[in-house]
Length: 272
Image: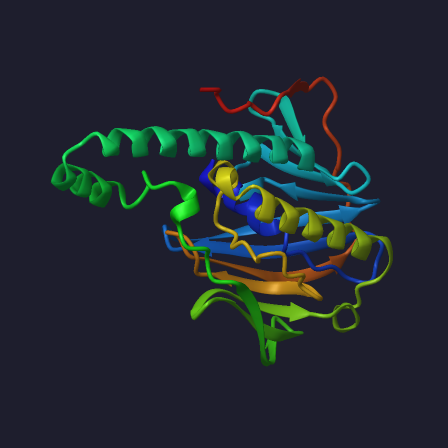
């Protein structure tokens, strides 16, 4: 499921489209965990974005509905579908944060009862995990640094470095609507999908591993335009995603949950 997770989190901030009200987007994804480059196709129509064989898994499709501001994962293997919206992710994030605070408090109390040398060794082994979160220094603020213009697959875009202090966490090449011919309903759907992903990235940092955890948190910075390439350097696995082709129309692709598929609930985190 890791490939699906990467597609889900990366795609949320990444789509471009053509002039037509129905658009097909081809893009490639690769990461440092595997030398293989995966080709993906997405379709935009009537307020919906549909990713076929998400993450390279032929049994999994992904569906975003702009009006509902929700994502559905369709599993053809067991004929089920699972939907979640921002409220559900916020709930999971709050649960995870509460669990983390409780665990840190219990560890801190346990360390306080150990001899100083033993407590120091334990803290070193845990990498500071047992320390209360309030004692941790705040992360450096995110900032966006605009660079020069590039052309990627015949698409003109501006390079943008996303910095966290002195560290580059991501590099994007962003095209504006006019240079790509973005217009109408597809553009609004893509922007809604992008905004949805940015909010999830910001709110769900405590549970991001459940959805890939590979998209950097941009700290609330809004991206003005559509990234046609993104290089992510944050986290243990670096990744690259590039739009390779834009075409009008979606053919005869069905952008809906198949009849007879059973709904499943996104699982809640265990309580302590």
